[in-house]
Length: 212
Image (cartoon, rainbow, N blue to C red; front, side, top):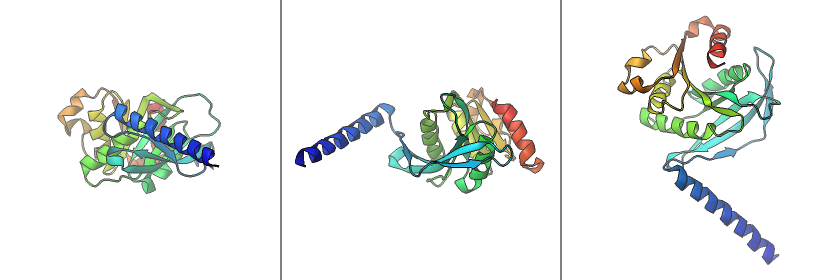
């Protein structure tokens, strides 16, 4: 029994060491993905497509745990899909993510841990770093979707990481995204502004064409 205990302890020690090395290599604000609950299956309301739903957490700066849910079409094997990160609280984003995944994308929504724009941007950057490495995520097709205050956060992170974000989807932002920062000049991705007054179905059609 003692030998077994030592063996398990050794394995745990090795795992911890590997995680520490990975954190050091990735620099400040490392990422890790943790499955918190069994995978669930739902249907997209608009298309009827079966979706897998799973809770995922990302460890960011100072070991803060950013929690959220990822939605993706069921039954995909090795196919890489566009990724949409919804930049507003999870309670607002789950309905959107369910609809977005119904168009054939991987969609993720989460709860911000930090208060203030800088802290929210750091949370989003931690999510961005981790979600690009998901098995079914296409790292060359990552989009940030902002709504309400999330529009500003999405723009901030996109302009600070211009090579990692292919496009911005902004729902009735109330401002010109290219005029909020000098860093916007470095951003070469595309920007889609949708009018929430048009309704979910019309907006989804625009977004589906945009991320295709």
